[in-house]
Image (cartoon, rainbow, N blue to C red; front, side):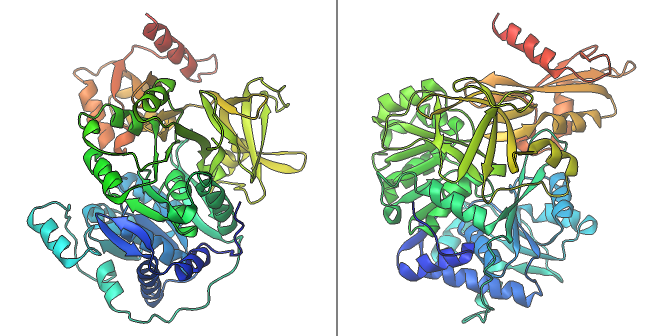
Length: 544
């Protein structure tokens, strides 16, 4: 495996940019950006941030879709020693307000389409400066004109005023930016990613430069036996605010490959991009591969350039993998990881035949234990909770002492992350997913907190009790179902009204698909909700 000499994400990118200045680094909406042009834009934006009185260590939120602007922003933040806080561009003001305050964000980079959400939280957060981007800003002039003329590129409304800036205009101010020396502290926090789980609010996961670099390099080089890293063209369908999109897509910029990004997933655009740019690798979640297989026009496109199909975020159904092999004569490789582990813990090697249902073998930087409920190691082949350790690992959540104590344990002097996933390993070192131990729902590759949805539903004035579970679904992993108890004197409340209520607060992938009304919910003698009984009942119902 390639060992980086650099201790900083930008310096690692910079060495590649100097080595391959004219090589394509990013492909966005059909336009190619070279390593040199990407480096220049990132350095110009870094200089602009410094001129706006941004200082090393400041938290900068990236609140935009996959785009060239996202990549430029991320690199600029790393160049000046700030901390990146990437979030999904579809978060509502509710989540935006919480995360901005939890991470102490002072600058936000947003799209014009979600600028209005930012304006709503300025009075309740520490955000001092807003930088907005239009999704066509960095494209050639003729493409911008065409996009506006035919309303192809979404356009939002932005306000003018003090402390509001256009990224495009900021870039135009600098010809030769004067920047301070790069910081060289591998243990410094590079970014804070937010992950779902068992809590009402997302949990901040601080990652150092060292952790990101070692994890990203070993994951991006998994396909090296079949694709030379500098020749790889990766279609990154996973969002860049997610660890999967970063370590398995964005990381190609650290080894000389090209990253193809699209602001949103469109099947025909995806197929066309694969054919037009001769994509070599594609990253996605299981639901995406099923969508591709079931697309009416799949047979109209030539996807033969792709040698490495990779799936993570959830377990790939055996049936999807089998259909893919029959259709294309190539397998979909899997991996397993978490935000807290900086992505892949195990990944399927490309130079062996991986067993069905295996999510891969251990990567070099990680150590694992499979333990019983009292933390004793299980016998080989027996299922148990997976614990993960690494040299540069995350050891705590941001501002969440209680959650940290639950999720990180010390055994024999080493800190281990409790994945809360039940796994087992065969004699060849292949790992298999068995079950989850916590009340987390896996929907379209996202980890969704049942508690968060329950909390939102219980804020409705007509609701007295709720229970949220995941219902197995072959297309999306699990669908979200809520069981609701209404107050005795309430009549006329419908499931539609409660779903509408959730939409005011929750991001789209957290909205329940089903609402079932109950007179009561099962609870223990001490009043604790027995979610497992609801799950068991739902399973019996599914079995007929």
